[in-house]
Figure 1 (cartoon, rainbow, N blue to C red):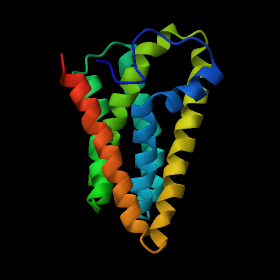
Figure 2 (figure 1 turned 135 degrees about the vertical axis):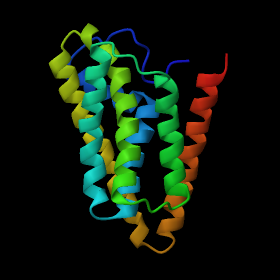
Figure 3 (figure 1 turned 90 degrees about the vertical axis):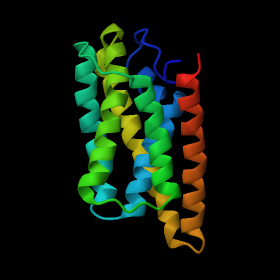
Length: 180
């Protein structure tokens, strides 16, 4: 099963279609919110570094997808991103800067690759990419804003619970990828 937002068929439309795509692909939306949420949980400098790193690494993955550089198990990598990021939040993992950046960067490559294979078929690839990146950034910001709940009484527990829900979706995505 392809990852929810990635069917490999090419993309119609331009800016609006690109902006809508992260909102309509549950796997992408949960991963993007999780990047911001985990960054907020970790604090400085990762609250900024992770949401900046993700689109940069995603662009590298998209370039690899556009030139058909083989990357195995892309759908599994996308699903694993949701599971892993959810677990990082649920378990309150305080990864070092290099480790957190490596985790987010590797998963961004998978997300980018999935989109890069579709992008050459887009009616307006520049408009689509612009809308897609803008919405991705806004989802990161939404995750950061939600992450600010940690300052409230029981806020950390609420965020960790949200991480558990995200991880459960990630497990469901993985089952969907692995099931025949």
